[in-house]
Length: 394
Ligand SMILES: C[S@@+](CC[C@H](N)C(=O)[O-])C[C@H]1O[C@@H](n2cnc3c(N)ncnc32)[C@H](O)[C@@H]1O
Image (tube, rainbow, N blue to C red; front, top):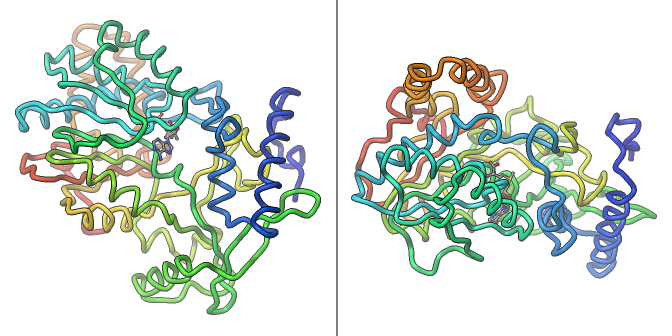
């Protein structure tokens, strides 16, 4: 393994390094218990979510400009405020309803959505957050108190999806990319599974694939109409379909808006993407070595949006739209929102216009990020897909 200094990654401080050593020791025990190797998805699950140790569960996840990576709600309040306007129209059409946000990160999006809905006089019946990380829950409560003041009383946290399916809107921004993936490499026509083993330290190895992975790769090859070719390396998310199935089951009536970076299947498994889409973030350095500093860095992979669409369809939902983030925000009213702000505060509008470039430009987040809308018993129009809709590419 190339060491992190050669990779140009910043050195963690002593405390962080000690934490990562504990995470690595935990993973090495898990490898021994498993008989010498862990499938990559189990490694990723441990590195991100092992109780008290993982990146998300042990308070190591740092978002924003001073952290490891930045997400759209932290780039600009325009993201959440534009989403809020789409949500207001949906709640109007439904005659009320609630919001369920999954994986709320720092809580900025929840705070800014609630504040915008309050400005519009369209507060939801309640705003619930499903968050797996206890430390992020605490951060969310603080951010909400700061950004949405008294409105934070509308917010409640859930340990799992609600017992009763909801009427309203389900939101998940950059959650699907954080679900553990399996990795594989083609050896001729054979699928080999990438596993993590221990040889005086963590290392990647190849093993026979489990049945689910072998079947998934066969389905992918059938769908794209060609074999991937020897050496082709990529990922497949075994939990995406069951996870989206449960999310879909939680929606009785309304709209789920799923935002993430990803591609439709033919582009995801394109010959040019032969090294896969796995990306790790450590203090704004993006790289592909998932074994560096376990517990201190984020690990994620692009979302196969064709698989996501199939999963929600199987759960009985309809696909109401699929767009790039830029096209969605354009349609959902970001330009009008900026004009309104400019009418009362031109200096603020100039700042926000600058921020909007990072959300919208194709070279920034505008094209890499996509929005998938899935609906149940909902016929209203969704403005985010009124100008463009790329459903045919799924
Ligand atoms: C990449 S962060 C995105 C945070 C936030 N949505 C944003 O855009 O800034 C992923 C978030 O999803 C949460 N998460 C990951 N897996 C989850 C799951 N299965 N259920 C609920 N939350 C999850 C993480 O703890 C974290 O809050």
